[in-house]
Image (cartoon, rainbow, N blue to C red; front, side, top):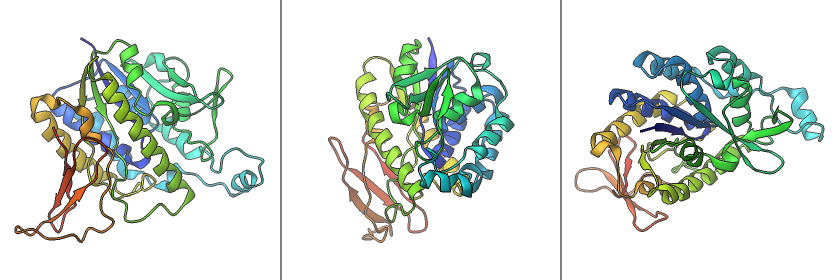
Length: 325
């Protein structure tokens, strides 16, 4: 039996996967294969080198806890002006990302990873999915995170590569092709309860990418549900923070750990319809809904699928969607 962890992208919401990894470690579930896209590639490469024990996951939690947008999205004024004048293909430089990878990756080449690792990127010219298993590890992860027009493409073997989320954000196909028969899917979720539409180009681009990717994941889960043993860990819900906001990492980790632990405690996380855990939905713009007899706010959520989901929240704490099982 080959067990794979498949980690999706999601910008700052990649912190969610740290809580999920911690819950899996609590249950002594470890992978034979790691597949990562964008932020998920960062997390997969980190734990491949640092290990899946408590110390390794705690180290990853500290990295996410210390990240801020300015350290990831490096602005160089001259570079930005060149982009606006049409002389550059991306608005930002990837200096911060490169520094992060130099500091935390423990192997130089993908084939040297202690756990087999697949990093998913996209051929910028054709849109073709590129499942990278060999070559420079830092450049591969950098390419997987290269959001078009935000970060410059990364050239590997003469091919310009950009964010893997454009082609396949969760890359279940890569895990299946590699022979995995049990797949734990670690989605980062998406901002399903933003109080208002994104107001900056960066947050708008990330929000659009996460929505697109999440819908692709839902379709892939339905496609592969009868092919392999799929366990989908539920991302926190509602998420009211932008995928460009890195200030909520510790909170997201805590919530994800709680929810993933609850899911794994019930039949090992297996569900008859795993796609319902990540069904695309929306929340009312205001959290000030009607109060029920126990002092909780309740509201109905429209869901893409065969049923609705209900959200209930204590007045002082964000609620959590209760998906169909």
